[in-house]
Length: 159
Image (cartoon, rainbow, N blue to C red; front, side):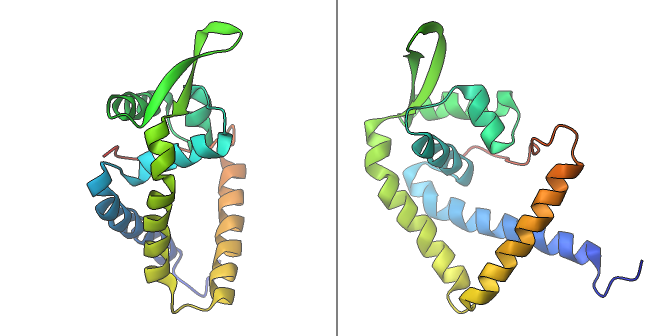
């Protein structure tokens, strides 16, 4: 196969870009005692509306259950989340956002969007859209190749 680009360079570039973006976001979220993985859990719960069980959060994020459980435990200790007994099944606990967290979501989102703007402001929107389409296709193919198609345990670090 004769590629017009180095496929190892593509993977390295994607990995390093993701790492740098995550590091910059973690730096900006640190004063709030947040990190990119914590923000991801908050966004997942915000989008779900009524809370979720831990295993569904893990599946949504594509990470192992024990990793999510540890993050949720710490986030609950820090007042970001709370576990509530599910209606109709007292054995089941739903993870929900606290009122404190709901009140901070717009501030957290503004931090994330500001970073995105700083990283992409001089790149034409059409280039960003094309990049997103291409990355989506690559991601879809990677998921198709994986047994079970559930993503992987790529979220690392809690704080």
